[in-house]
Amino acid sequence: MPSLTETRTYNRTFEFSSAPAPVVVVFGGTSGIGEAIVRLFATLTKGRVRIIIVGRNKERAEGIIASLPQPPEEDQSVQPDPDSNLPKTGYTFLPCDVTLMGNIHALFQTLTNDMGIARIDYLVLSAGVFGFGGREDTAEGLDVKLASRFYSRWKILEESVPLLEASRSMAQSTEAGRLRGAPGVLSVLGAGQFMGSVDYEDIGMKKGYKGWKAVVQSIAYNDLMVQAFAKRYPGISFTHAYPGAVDSGMLRFEGNLRVLNILTQFLLRPLIRVVMTSTTDCAEWMVYSLLSGSKEVDGVAGGMFRRNNRGEDIGMDAFPNVEEEEEKLFFEHCMDAVSVRGPREIGSS
Image: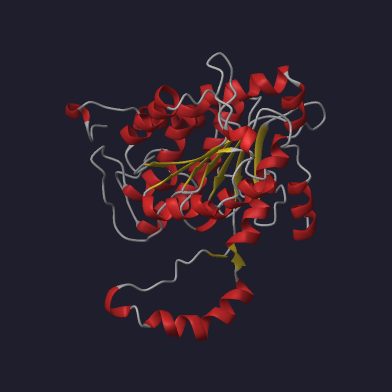
């Protein structure tokens, strides 16, 4: 298990200086762990990076972007060659409600067609709602919690594969790419925290829904997701990571209860600092997990990885039960569930 000091050293000695500048897409990048990862990538690359921040809070995103290190002037003036994968450096916010699969499809159309993004080197999935309430379906017929914590991530991977594959091709064909390693995907949720078994007769939980069960099943679904994509795209690293208890600012009160924030600040903040990890430190371990999965090991780059909150590879600990036929059933269900349907098909099984 790497110490925080070792993790910081690894991240800061990673090869980012070679051309072309890395392309990083962070879903959930306007708050919490996602925001901290955005800030860390901007710091590690000294601003010589193309970061796409995906979220729902434009004002928050603009504030984050304004505070990030700016790329060198020579990089800002370089326009991308239409026949190459070299993008301009800089930061862009794209709004997206990821609970709707149609929104995700439209976002990737914007990325490729309007923005000219030809590859993704690092993809971070950290958007998601947390709650134990009852089932609440989106207009597309998926539960909101499962859509945000799982189905959106599957859809993002499906849409991003051509861009990740373009990065993989560059990694195999250029010296800069070989130094940097395979493209990487990081899903921040709960690797190693799954307890119980997957109900393959009710994938998506339309028959027997409970809020706590949806939270648990979404962890298992993420494990099965990285396994499925790693098998199909072996030159890309797919990592599911558990961030641990993180002080991401979720303990905030609104409206008439806002006065309680003062009590929280003075009474609970010292305890929170002791028992929880800061988003800044968490980002170091999460980015370490992403980058180390991209490096070549025994002549092979990419594959499936599962990491704990200190960046340690936990192997198959607490991996969900799955047989070959169940694996196939799960994959087919997910591909069908995230397909962008017409109005007459919304909510259909």
